[in-house]
Image 1 (cartoon, rainbow, N blue to C red):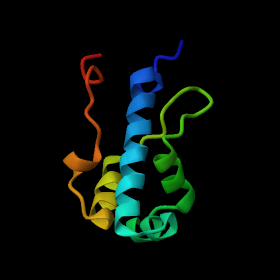
Image 2: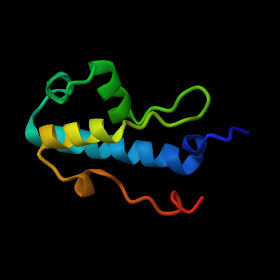
Image 3: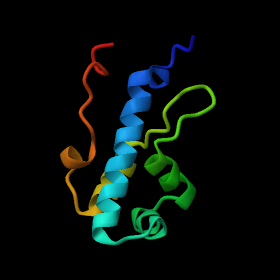
Length: 93
């Protein structure tokens, strides 16, 4: 079993929920994935992975860095509190 905290089922679920929140907000603004990625200064592939809630072959969630999340929040005109899902049990490990 991996010792990487990002490899837990809780983090995988967090990544999936974050992805759903990203897509909902992007759709509400009528933006394409390409537009969000470009405006946030990240690659389209990275943004697609975040929106998909992708998990690596090792089981680790592909969660963005804080600076990336803040950039995406700015593009999507949303606060970080509105974008990030709740994290029950994740911080108590």
